[in-house]
Length: 297
Image (cartoon, rainbow, N blue to C red):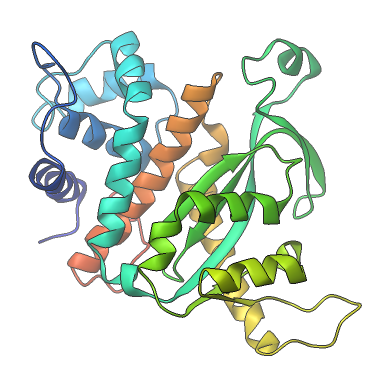
């Protein structure tokens, strides 16, 4: 296989059609199938289109050979929001189909997802009650929105992910995520979880031990240096580079979602796109597994 957008989308289409198969629809099937819908969403995110109107105009002109039929903007929005569960399944399918699923080293971090920039927007937003105010220490700024919690391998392949109110503690979110996805941790033996100081806590470390997970994190000022701490600086760069891929190349902060379903599916769309690139690069033995350069034009 070669590394270009057409090959990537064709491989993804065949993968979804073969492994997931079966329509989600009762009655007359839609002209744009589920497999095609996911490929359209990946292509939009890969090519950097944050506006669906601009994207559909571009796709009708330049990608007609790949997608003979494309819905109108309203239809595409409805289909995409309804496909959140399907996108989650595809992300998990791609992760399990790659060599990275067997990796016993996981990295976890959280990154802000701004959803509003003004007080009037916050007051009338449909996200009120789910989103909240938070503080981003990396950029020394307050924001209103959500936090994306991503558990991935050092190569960047997503294993677990969730969106949460920034006011909820990091340990609480990760504990809930592991509870919901307990089967994933059970499939791995001796997981080493690399995280930052925000996840520190004896009770939480005990909880991780019940899942067979060992924690590696920097020591706090009030405790002795922990085992393996010198290697953390290099590892921290890995998770920062994963966040940079989502934000810098896949426009995560420019998601444009205004509702619960809209924000969730737009974030899932970016995570899926990164997982697709990593999966395909791994299958084609590319030298850099998280590189999007071959597909973003």
